[in-house]
Length: 238
Image (cartoon, rainbow, N blue to C red; front, side, top):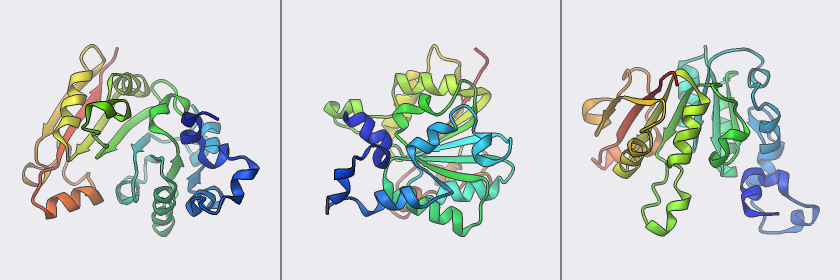
């Protein structure tokens, strides 16, 4: 099986002989049997284009790409119980850590899917998302690693397609190149910058300050006196 499919499906792509491997990531099996709020890759695909079925209700749908340990997803889901929140994370351990936070907080409006963010089109239909939240994506600064960068022209096209008109993208980053790259790939697309900041701690985020959660990465950078940048984009009518 090709590597891209392994990245997307993980547990779902394993063959019987794989389970005898003593080096198998213990969180791989754990995420598969965890149950709600975890969705395996195969389970997430079932809800593509019909996410209200996953949450058991119709509500605005917000996606966090790269949920990490789950502080932001759980915090925002608690702050906005009127919205459905879906986290997307590629690492098995982080899926489980996020799921535990969701369970401990008794949040019925949050789910975490183990999926590859390079394949958003697998899970969402045009104009299905009300908001996309992207926190501290890896900038992959070396030129030879450019293919690994999430922020790209292809990503921007997917954002423009999947956001509803009026939907927003919130980007937080500790690396200026991420912000600059995002601004460089949106010309010609129905995406427009509403606001930006080069230091959230000093100037506040480019959205209401009381509508934000400090991420684990953001906290660490603040403690070191380093700035975290942020960008707010909106999807205009085509």
